[in-house]
Image (cartoon, rainbow, N blue to C red):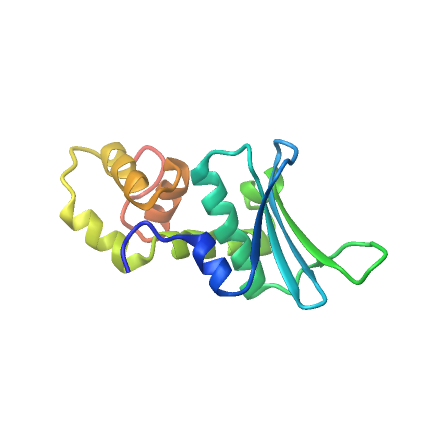
Length: 155
């Protein structure tokens, strides 16, 4: 396996339908589970790196969480990825963000890339890895901090 990881391919392989949709700007995506069907809706207007992270994030919910009930006419469970979840204050959102980061940038691949890259400073490292793994610089920064490769803001 090589970078970048394709979360949409993983979703399809798991039988999850990924549907780009028009959504409010503050909503990145959603996970719908009903009657054995699983659908990830992703905001089509967001940049590709954000759509990739959103799909991976929703796969994290699918793998780790039963889903939050939403009162509808049917027995449907739904998870939304929005500005609250991207700030990661809720335990399930933090877990889904960590899952997404690990899925898109597996530790062994990141460490190998770090050792093989030439960089003058942390910002250059983050930019280079962001391009290689097709993640936002913010997401890659957090991934590197979580792996203990960099120390945090200000480095």
